[in-house]
Each structure stands twice: as C-alpha cells, then as structure tokens.
Amino acid sequence: MATADILTGQFVILDQTPASIGDRIIARIIDMMVRVAYVIVALVFFTWVPSGVDDDFWSLMLVLLVGLPLVLYTFLCELLFNGQTIGKMVMKIRTVSVDGSCPTMGSLFLRWLLEIVDVTFFFVGIIPIITTHRHQRFGDLAAGTMVIARPDPSLMHISLSEFQYAFPDYQPHYAGAKLLSLGQAELIERFVNVADRHGACDESALANLSRKVAAAIQAPGNPDSLQFLRTVLNDYRYYALNEVCLC
Image (tube, rainbow, N blue to C red; front, side, top):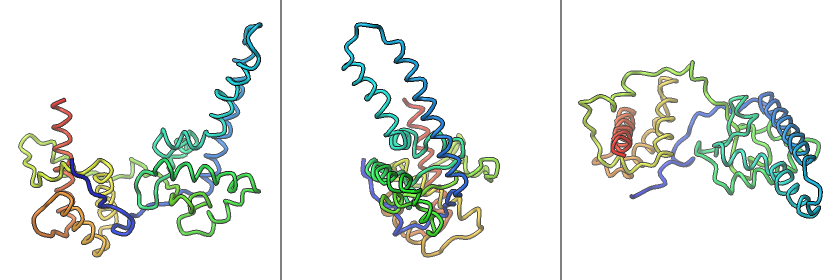
C-alpha cells in the first residue's frame, strides 16, 4: 500500500496546548510514588526468596526486574502507552512530536536520556519549560517533542456530519482515501477540529495541507477547502469501517 509523509510541521501548523508546569510537576510526583510503590512490592517479593538459591542469580534478577524498569520507567511507559506515563495519564497530558505526530522510539529515548540533566541537576529543565513557547525542557528541545494537555471530551463539539461515513447509503468520493495511514488521518482530523473550534483557519496552511492530501490520495484537481478534508476523512473512515466489518 502506498504511503506518503504528507503531514509535518513544515506543511501544517496545529494548535496544541502545552501542558502547564503544575500539571507536569504533579505528574512527576505521581510517577515517583509509582516507582516507590514498585520498589516496595519488589523488595517484599524478594524477601520470599527460598534459602539455598544462588545469590548471584537473585542479584541478577534484582537488577533486571527492579533496577532496569525503575531507571527506564519514563522511556518504557511513554513508548508503550502512546506518550504517557501513569502520572501523565492521571493529569491528562501527553508527550507528542512538535508536529503533532506520535514520537519515535529514538525521540523518546533521547528525551529520557536528557532527563538526567533536566531533573538531576537542580531541576534545570524547568528553566526552558518556563522560557520556551512550547514549554519544552532540554530533553524535549533535543528530541523535537513537547508535552500537551489532552482535550476534555466533555468540551468537544461533535456534529452529525462526522458520522456520515456510517450511514448505509454513504458513497465515498475518493477511493484513494484508503491509502492514508491512521496517523495521517488523525492529523487531518485534528486540523479540521482546530479550524471548527476557532471558526477559521490559516488559509496558507489549509492550501498546503489540501494539496499534500490530494497528492497522497491521488485526487483530481487541487482542492483547498475544509469540506474537501472532511470528505477525505469520512471516506477514510468508511473504508476503515468496512475493512473491520469484513475481517
């Protein structure tokens, strides 16, 4: 299936709200509590080690089962839980790439690696969080990531047109919409939602995005309207829904 890297920061400007410093600090405190609880449970477990078992073996297990997860906690959680640690889940914040996409493993690893500088050295990471536009610590700046506040679903405005693809008589307009990846569709949806929320959008960004989407799905002409993006999105959902139903 053909794919195209159509949505990056140079083509689309997404409206993402950086998480507040307070939320990030509380999330980190929660994560520290989770780590402490994990260590206590692990140590209690290791007190049940039967006598006669090789000490070197249990020392290795202690390092592998306690030490590594403890040290790699942030990296592993954000890698496995879509940019969130347990603390971030509670505070409804999330780590994303600055272009709105999911961070790569390399980005998350670099971000985690520089956590040593940001947190250990007198929490110097707070300085760039306060002074940068996207509230990024040094690890975020190096990895090209940021921490955003997840929107409250209760404040989201949903229109019936978003579910047109599920109507029995729906006819897709662009067969190429099935070529989009889930990540690309999510970014198109986010752009449309931002435009709907503000009642307007950057015309240049809209034109660039529409042109890239049209090229990716091999759509005729060069449409540059929000309605075009909505139609492509509904077509993508229609094909995705039917693919699931056929499985």
